[in-house]
Image (cartoon, rainbow, N blue to C red):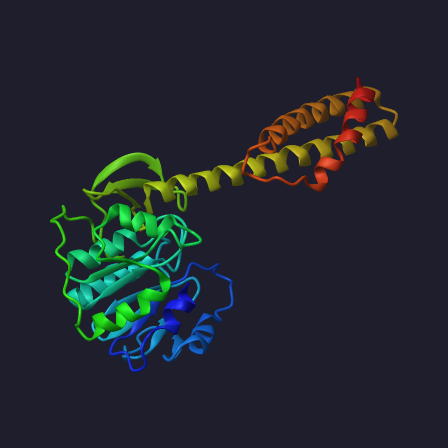
Length: 324
């Protein structure tokens, strides 16, 4: 989708473009090279403190937020927002603050809700909001969330977005009248959060989350991690999954260690100690089996494949019967 947009941008566009794509921190940044081959504008990786020049595409590097100031761009290793770094919201908020009505924010295909709050900041500052039509987006979460939060000036297909950006850059499009909306939060990375304290904890740092915003709710911790309600639920699910796997691993390791101690005690002809370790092993293996059955039950989204540990289960059952 991004390549489709870039390929349709006009040559000599009197605007700079800034791109944020959700990527793993350790991923190699080849996106700028790919985008340079797609269209008429050169694309480069953004660097901290670099002056902003028109007719160029700047790509946020992995694991850094890209934020704008008048005339310059900056990279920050600030807290993740909606589980991402780089995230779209910091770019949108900072661009709205720095360039007001001269900003065009674009949301393309993507999961969850990143970008919706920032796009609202752009509109409230007098800029334009463009959202890819969710019906053609492979991942509808981001465009659907932006449309739900609103307001949005244009809902377009990917092939229509590039030409529309060109029109807006030369001022050939009138701003659509937007119904007045209650002002939402437009927090920068270093602002205090304010708002109402909640009973929820941050999935990233486990600090208290504060609820901010009027028309829509955003959740921020003291250090700046930010979540929408849906991305908070997703992050909590991920945390629960990690905790369950950690518990399963600990139970199975404890059961395995107890079996080794049982074997050692039997080898030393000490049946009473062997029986004690066998009982502990049976207890750990039973709890692990219950947890595994829960996690691997049909319909669970945790995992669908069996692991090597599952193949060891018949042997464990035989050993449990022998211990009895």
